[in-house]
Image (cartoon, rainbow, N blue to C red; front, top):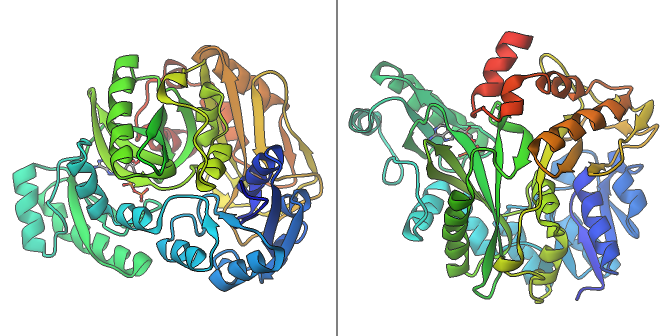
Length: 448
Ligand code: ADP
């Protein structure tokens, strides 16, 4: 086991990793930009190193700064959190070249899953069901139009290098194809420096269901059920729950086994998420994320496991602490993402926190790096915390969420808290009857 690990991240996720390390008796090193000198993750870690100016490119994304911080402090391994360098294959290679351990999958697995066409081909070959679509990239408009006719509209044009919901365009009919195809290509070129796109059938009422997998890198892997993350704004998740209210125990066991078997076959190591669209009882693979997800706590709540601890264990060569038969679901969990954003436009709202009070009590978990007097810097993501609740069943979890939101105080900046108060008054949220478009429609009518 490692003696000391470095966390190449900031905010709540850096704190999350510090906590797991401390419980395991492992020393933690925080890195930070000059803008984050007073951040909670810096205060809570055993050591800290300033790695550069506020700009992420010169700090949290700087390979030399992070590798040097490991060398200065004697850290043996790097946990990347999510975002930043967590899915950067080149970084993983450099970490390994320096004799350090990356707490996550191999560079090769990240590379394969980072290219969406290769990821889809790989998953198809491993027996995972995929959204019907083009065989590989689509290079010309003529080819795109021909496919549209064959597959039937609507279709979605997606960037091979895509991520974060960018480079995706829907064509409802043949007349919209030219514009959608050209826009997807130019957006993709601008965002990712690569204009390769592919085409999929556009599903009109799916849910976003993602399966949590975990591998030991030695050919063993398990699944930890699914999360339903259908409540999205601009393809970004805002409310996540586990288990999925629309998924039966039989469906869970079947898709879970397909996913666990697939990652076992490729000797996957660590945490991964296989994302699907789910419509009329069928699962369609869209992508795999080769990292810990923002919403991992809902899975931890219902299975009673610490996924970060497991990540650190397998990275050090140890076994996972569980096998498939040990993983039994207990109750229901919901997470809401608290962003420093001003409604109704969700514009960033950085600034000083004048009062902070975290909710508590049975079944409440607050993952946040906020404190009284903390100044949220304007340079980074607007996520300032995650409120996670756990109950014996879904109604209890919803009631607990309502109660915990009522106790939560974050003053000094605008936040997305009022959005959740309003959502909890909606019948569809209580019945679990929503798909990936529900929230956008609701926002149009309630905040438009
Ligand atoms: P990204 O990596 O940019 O997040 P994904 O492939 O994961 O892209 O898709 C993000 C979201 O876009 C999905 O959760 C879903 O809301 C929507 N989406 C993607 N593919 C389709 C599709 N074939 N049909 C309908 N919606 C889709």
